[in-house]
Length: 293
Image (cartoon, rainbow, N blue to C red):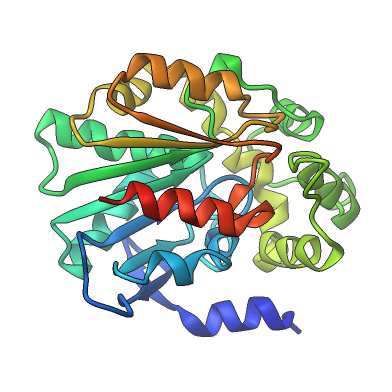
């Protein structure tokens, strides 16, 4: 039986058939007069759109907000297939086309930064009708060689690209321990948070696919010039919102991106780890909303 928080989140969204898969989507209208293009939120690995539940109310005060769970994540389908960030971007484009969106504000985290990079690259190349008008980038491996992968991530990358044997793991304890290690010691996740995250990862045996979907890291390395280049060179206004106590996507990345894009605004969330939208949702939401012009 799902936890109350997960059940509430699931009821708030719906599943849409996109490119042959059922994808969980939450489409929330602006509560007040809209002040700009809809916000598209792209989440990270290994979690899902559920991460954003504490800040959704602030984000949709004056903007329509659209979130989805990538294929293989959260409440979306979890097929036993090879995974690619290019295909995740295909699904994103299929969603925005189905919703009739032609202009968006792009808000991305972790792996979502890379999927967002492909969305931006397609626009730069003239291969997409979607226009990204403004961007918020937060805690993700923009520069993959600077990433400090967790022990769990390194172990998953050593496994073959196939479903994990149930006798190998990961167990709930292993997953929760690894996830908790990416939070700041000042803002650790509680047992309820970790339990909900495990529930979403393990839905449909998704935990057995973690070694498959983490292949985005070597893919990210292969295509860094394309994706990081698009993040650096896209002409839309950029705000970088970064927890400076992130042990994985270290703060040096935010400073490096800020130096590469002199017009970008860098907002530092002091003492915050890899999941600012969970750790300090008020501070994080204020920084994101202020960056949406």
